[in-house]
Length: 383
Image (cartoon, rainbow, N blue to C red):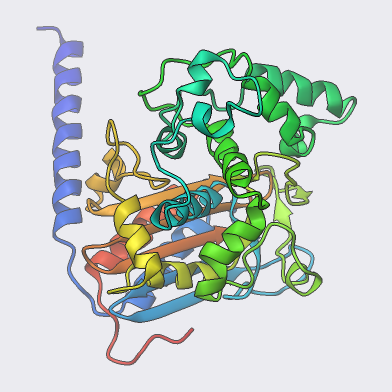
């Protein structure tokens, strides 16, 4: 055996030992009985990177809530975010879209396994493959539809002209373009396999509009948001709500406005607050009530098991850090990012909102780990 091979073998053994030790530490974290301090320390580690101008964290555990802001809502001023600060939540909106679907199914308005052919076939042209797609497949990213169809991307670039379409990509295409695509469904793969699709979840919102004769945002407000008092969660922000909107920044730290959605709003158009999202978490974990009933149905793994109805199942990293029981969703647009996670077994949940397009998954997983392993101090947490 050459020296190089010996060195390589030793490095491999060292790496395996390090991984096993880290995994052991994750499974044997001592409870220092100060969850709020543990959250502060975890956020401080991530703030050092400079990728997060401002962060709002919300935690629910043992019937108690914790909301705290870090950094600033705008680099030009010194104002710490709080539970009322508004952030665009991007693809976390998909959980709201899926919740609307589940609510309408629970009411008997529509069936989870109804096909596009049954619901839309009498009013528009659909390709054979599109006709067979079910609402369940749209909500679990198993419809075979691409993330965004290439033809729609080309159309958006054409309509953007000299502007950069990536600055606000969903602002160019109306719902007519979405439905026109279904006539050919070019690029659609065989249904049944997981492929994350912004198009599919956005289409789901439009299909529910067609079924009910109502607009998507008013449906979500009536069925999901209003019953939980989530009055700061919206697509079209009222002036008083917009005044609380944090300034968004691109991944390079440049200021940018929120994305607007001429179509496919169900994929990522909502803005919200840590306070509202904690209300959503609490209602989902309640012992009874419509929101809790929906959550129980939605978090069950579907098909290949990567998604429930709108909820992602734990990944390898979630399991590695001990968060085996969570369902979660993340999101990112040009100026904001979000992470939402609920652990039904421990009746706990976490929401992370930030005003820069920087990944929040690792922070969210580590905060959830702290929630799982640490208890509150003897005095109640202060919000």
